Length: 492
Image 1: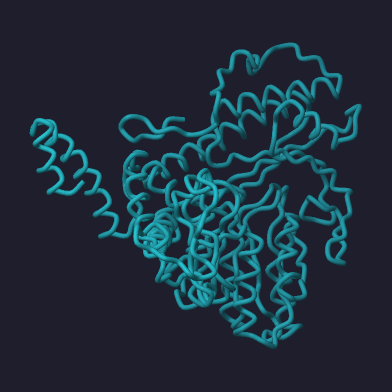
Image 2: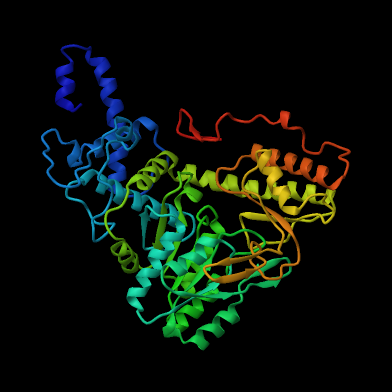
């Protein structure tokens, strides 16, 4: 209600009560006004009522919700199901226009404003986590692989004669298939073994660029976040090469926003050399459903070109999810989640070292991987190695990877020896676990207990003492969701 409505309400309800209600509404509207003024993620997260108030106001700005609207076009945001309409807060027009995913829609002022504000808030978060000089970003309704395709297609417009993408090997199919889908030929660079860790062969990248000629190289595609024992690519060294030879550099930062170390390396790479874009998943970094990614870069003109490459309008669902989540989380909530994740990485490493020592194994030394941990596997198991992963999954453990290092895989006509290990000759079979954003100490406890029991059973080693407590000692939440407390703090 506006001021006039409150005045009229005084005929029916005591003024004192209405004054309190008006002050409450004013406080919520102040938060909205500050967001509109600053275009930054709020320092403190909002409560759900304020977020819903703003979403409803934005929805009422779209033409499909105008009381007098008469739609005679082929796309009028008509939604048959009331449930679907509520699920989307009556925002039915999506984002962008046919020529540019970032362009404002005349029929959807509210959706367009929501999209712009979301991009502003994400940019603020990216800068706050370490990539301080990031110039622009774009939230797209694509997962990481297809977002990499969009970046490569944008490069194709700038370098129509280019044929190759140089790619330091990471055994994750969507990265490789992104190169194929964009119409380029991948040049796979095998990693170098440095102790336990796999690192970038910068000299081989240099050799391939000079051998194939810089003008024939569409881009070098590097990686930050990945499964151990691979470490973050040597971004700064690769960025210097790309700057020297005039070759575009695109970084796959799939779940790197949750690591300040990953973000720092991206910032440093841009400072000393060339970085055209870095791509990150929304679900892996911001705890929203799968379906979105953020394409960011240090040159706003390139990011704008990426937006213009997207054909047609786009779904607004991933943007709305991220908009709600960032308003709910706030900068402090996000920072707290990152601090908790980092602490749990240390705890998970320590607990896995305890299990490894018990069974004569060891946790691999991968200091350049801030998220994933790898532990060697015993040779005396009475089941195939991969069966360990299956048994853990049946015990409710998801996300682990058991790597034998002996698997071969054909992908789009290319053969990968030692698939899964990022190398054709990694010396150990191993298991990985990741300390990712949203993980809890209870997750660590249960994983270690279940891993211990599986290894005990399959190696025949008798567990003479209970090191980590029983599963019954661990109190789990009924839901893994994070809920907001009365003062806006993150509980969990």
